[in-house]
Image 1 (cartoon, rainbow, N blue to C red):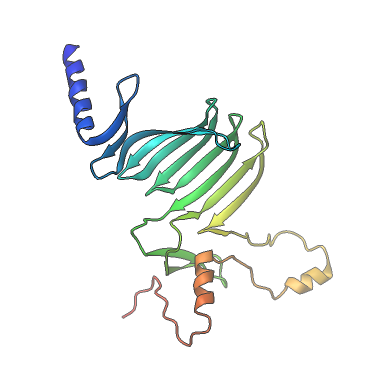
Image 2: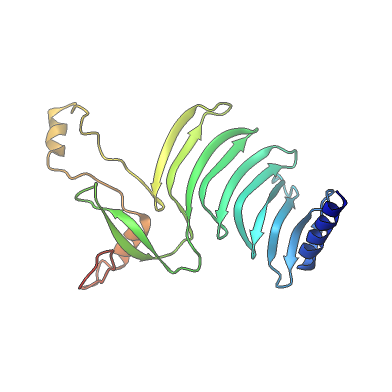
Length: 226
């Protein structure tokens, strides 16, 4: 068993040699490492004290080259779990969970975008045929987008109260239920010639508004041209 101890010391010493500053836990684990380029690396525990009536908290997770990466947990200073968030490129990505008195309060769904990319490709629903989508390339304005199902629970239970669905930062409006009976003749007349409405992603709406008065706008799509 003695050789395991020496291997542990060697690994710990190697990690510490890469850090300009760091802390050691009671178990001699290295945390809060800042390398010689002043980038946060590895596991960090961050404590924020109460200030001007705002409650303090403590959070823990991993930094990679100064960017949050993977799962981060936040606790109150009393030790109650407040949130479990997932990061990619320092942006929220995937399912995020938020708690009240250690009970799940709501879940959010986010999509992270590579911050080193200036453009991204989106699958945009066809307004005339919602079963089809078109690919459009747009300039990125934000690097974390609401994308997916958001769930809200009744306080003190896991009973689901409501859900919302987002598509690339825009609230998705589902198509009307065509099997649902029409309640009045007037309503039937009004909806006879109407096309289903599908919300555009906010990024696409902004692009359309910006270029609405231009005579000729070239949009890059996913089609292949000869």
